[in-house]
Image (tube, rainbow, N blue to C red; front, side, top):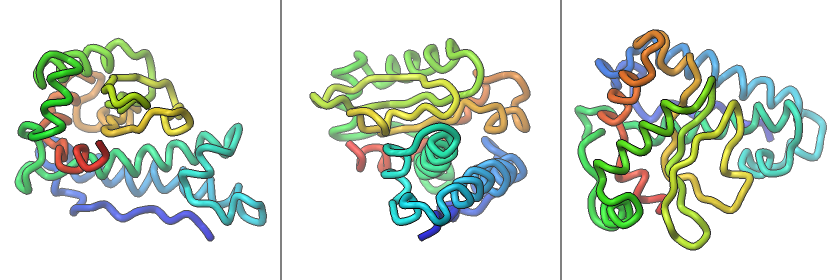
Length: 194
């Protein structure tokens, strides 16, 4: 069964003005689709063709693992965002807000630490909010296609740090992109993964 490119959960222009429709289109229909297409070409006629995307990420190696991880991570990224007009951004509530305050001191302290980690990361990759096996929350930044999905942690929130996610709208200014990212986070979705 081929891996499908998931449809965006909103119109490509719905994240404006924080992420432009052109940037979203290039990222989704260009980069995301390229990973899905490359992965489908690699798994055709193999035992991987019968596996779900998450299982391919966990079992594949080399280029197949990289394309699978990028396809999965980018799919999660789109689901972690919600148009501001539909309630994206704002503040987490309930159990998630409590867990963030316990782990990082406050929600604001979490955002600061997340931004610092994302800005410290060199080159392309991902920033994550994770739930550890023991239930603690943690922040991680992974290079290139590396995903926590291959380990014991549960990814709750994904922020794409690949240049194609922010160069079209913010140039080299990753910090401005992160400011926009927080205005779009779908905290209900993130909480549902907790």
